[in-house]
Amino acid sequence: MIEQLRTNLPLWVEASRVHAREGQVAAYIPELAKAPRDALGISIMGRDGTTLTAGDNSLLFTMQSISKVFTLMLALSDNGEEGVFEKVGMEPTGDDFNSMLKLELVEPGKPFNPLINAGAIAVTSLIHGASPAEKSERVLRYFQDIAGGAPLTYNESVFRSESATAHRNRSLAYFLKDNEVLGEEIDVEDVLSVYFQHCSIEINVEQLSRMALVLAFDGTDPITERELIPRRYVQIAKTFMMMCGMYNASGEFAIRAGIPAKSGVSGGILAVVPGQFGIAVVGPALGAKGNSTAGVHLLETLSTAMDWSIL
Image (cartoon, rainbow, N blue to C red; front, top):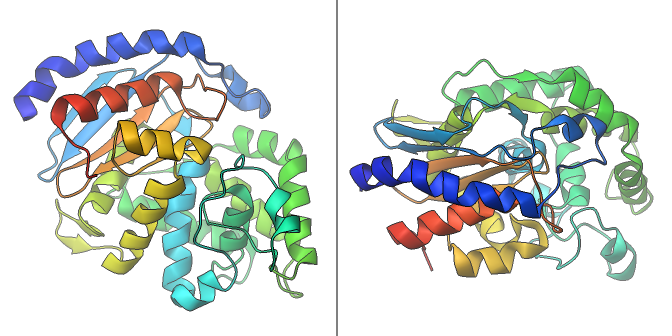
């Protein structure tokens, strides 16, 4: 399998790269609009650390919504399942990732799942720490540990750009406050600061594939044999990835690729082949539903060629 991947991966990347023309880089966060539209890179990491890369694998990008998978697991560690799911549901929405429609129409007014923006904001509010700075530092250390000690940092320009233009996210957060999903003691702007910061953590595909590898092996880093995340919390996260990790294109991706994945509007996608590989892709050009056009095509090609679907 490794030799087949080694031989074909560069060819598959170039065949998928043309699909970048079908998308556009995210412009609603001005800093993201600076990304190279035609870029496409991938890293696939196996249980012994063997790593195959192709394309623009050195491109740095921010995690954006991919970070929601890991803040969910941190919040579960801090609060347990009951504490988290008191504030956020377990169902896909079928709506856009930044929609507030069901917060108003469906009782009790809490977000449907942790991977839409409203749900991720609610989850972020549950991360322990005495201040926003302490919470953000905990998040960064947690991500670094899962990435094998990688020296991850926040992209300050993206953080500021995101914060300055986040009118919809602020509306969602204040709506959650009004619905008492965010408690009386919680400062909305403090929560948003932590949320924007974890979305702006900068990474490359090799570092992200190391994080995916930990999920592929149920919370244990197979390279170091350290258990980093309780297996149950990884199971919950991967289930959400399968149901709603690709926004409201998750059903189509599940049918075509059949592997757990989570995308972000910087063009990154984290994907998992359980018990085998952690995968990360970056392709900044996005389709109408917020997923990398070239990245999705590449993952679907890989899954079909390598028979990776878990369904």
